[in-house]
Length: 287
Image 1 (tube, rainbow, N blue to C red):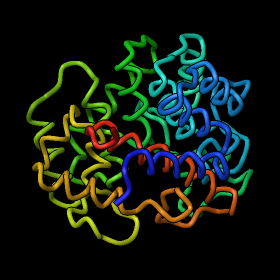
Image 2 (cartoon, helix red, strand yellow):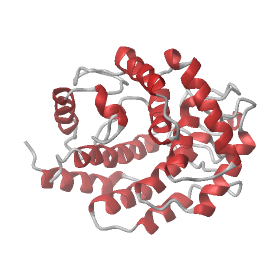
Image 3 (spheres, rainbow, N blue to C red):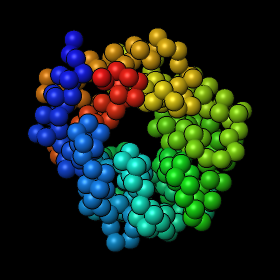
Image 4 (cartoon, rainbow, N blue to C red):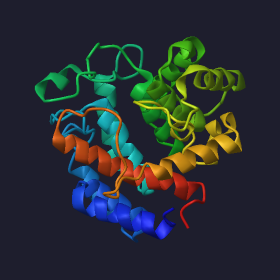
């Protein structure tokens, strides 16, 4: 079995060989003494004049146009490196407000998706979606951002939690967990219902489950998060072992879906490799 040094060395070589600049800086910040400023500068390369983000920051969306999910990606990176820039975030919120629906949330994807190559599941419906509305709102609450859009989005997310938990998919639930984790006035009964939905049909408890599935570590990537209480220690340990075993001979981690291009495959694998290392680090398995 590889030691932590071997795992990191192989992953670093993969990232340097295959990953985009953004994920090189994410890796350097987390494991190599890199700066937050460099990671933020890399994120800014994906920013549009309207305040939103595009340009394949979400690798399955190859077009230039701003989209809600890339905004969530950008905020995750800012959160990851602890650099939640006020002006950048405010401009992103202004853009979110401009594309918000009457419900108060933002769609999964906008009609402008048709202007560039994209994976086939990115279909514009015009409806608000908890993915990524709830994830974005949760990150904004975490950093105590104040913006008119956040108030409306918060109301939308609370309606979803009251009325639509039974219909959430796995990716929806991960976004909603971010909201529940950080939004004020947490409702214990809603949290229980969300946990039951995750345990009852959204999580793959078998460590070797094939295909595009969500493991307990996708819901609880850190031992301090709310969803950690959904899984016992043995389950978490088994999935940490399985995650470590998925590192490929080239040093990177695989993906379990078909992106729309060869470039997207490498971009996703670079992103996933850095993310796959942060989980065992959080659980004390990378020493």
